[in-house]
Image 1 (tube, rainbow, N blue to C red):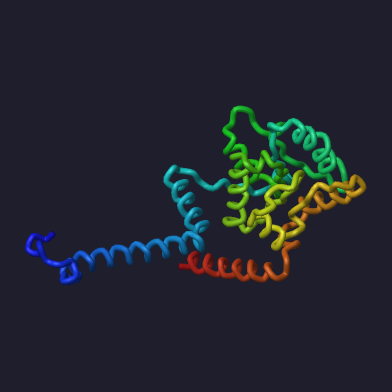
Image 2: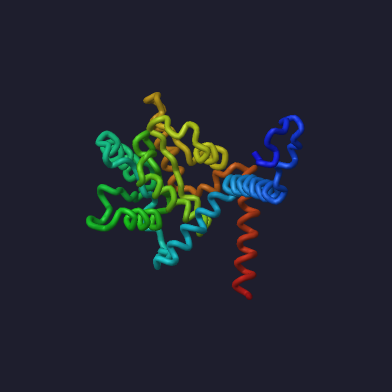
Length: 251
């Protein structure tokens, strides 16, 4: 092959005769284009994944007719979200956390509990949204089983909506078990607002201190606990956002 080269020595054949320049250029162009698109896509996904995800979910909600829930006053000081399927966790929340937060301390705090305050028959997503919107803080009681549940992921998403839309940081993490050890989200919370991440103490004598820290986290604004290094960044972002909002409203 080819027929005109039969009976000729292989050594005498010029290798360039077998190369089609058009096909070679096309293959080179397609492979280079594929590599460039892959690199750009990977970089964009790494840098802008959450922004793109938020925009996608926002417009999908707009197309489905969802609208923002407006509430002038907070009905509850805190919404406690936890694994209601775990009987031990439910008993601990109802008999210990509820008593310490609502009945302990100088100032009583009204909290919202799924097993006590949710309206029966209403979809879970609607109850979650209403509870988070009507509460000053959202306390996540974290266990291994709960962080893998869909309810936890949805509650975190809705709590972040308040941060993005209203600039209200309402998240308080209460770790009953050592969970999310390698989570970037937990590391960010510790750096940004260490007072909003609480761990159940192993020493029984430290429990009263833990309850007092929890009450303080519920009553006070998370922005007051922000690290100075990061609070300057968020303050500048907030000022820019206010400037853009006033510009668009005036226009």
